[in-house]
Image 1 (cartoon, rainbow, N blue to C red):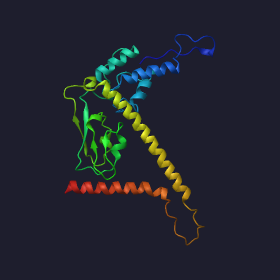
Image 2: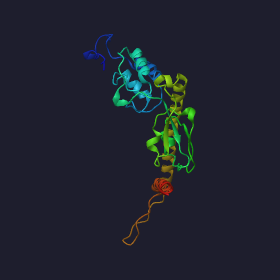
Image 3: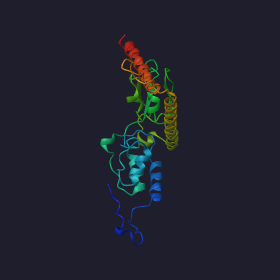
Image 4: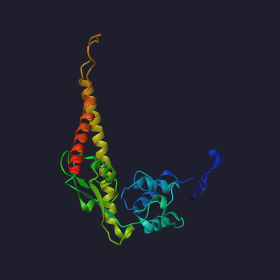
Length: 248
């Protein structure tokens, strides 16, 4: 991994050509690098999303060979942008392979909605206690929905045959995935704010408990504590039904 030259000591005098790049230069470089990534948002590079991996490369904090979905062609693209030598794909981060497509066995789906939030591009359609389905044209094959499913009803199938890396994925698909990921993260943030607002509203309307006596029963849980437990009970019951169906 190459390192950037340190800034001049003392902080005096003009900035030399070898000084660390400005934030504006880093942002421009990260934008270019991000545009060269396939935007599957799979996290296999070791970063939460493609953008953060691009920013790490721009700061010389990550190698250019950590993106299996981009494959060898992707490494070559990043090498051209950074001036670094082309490297073999890092085995620690995965191997180049055909693009995958998530498929939900709707007969086993319990409608828990856990995969909906796990999908970084909102390619799964469904609702609570309703069967879910994958929108094929939007799926990036990131595989993140698979471990999120509590009943193992999601499988991955080959979606590109012998084509791998950028040969199995287009710039238009990458642009679409980037935009859908942006909307997905905005939705999650909005949902979290709404839940926090509801929690605050419930807490503010809970009357103060009466003075406790030695014979008084323990206070019931506040309404704010009930909702998460209820959701877990619903999921647990659905899991039990799914297991019963499978064992039967």
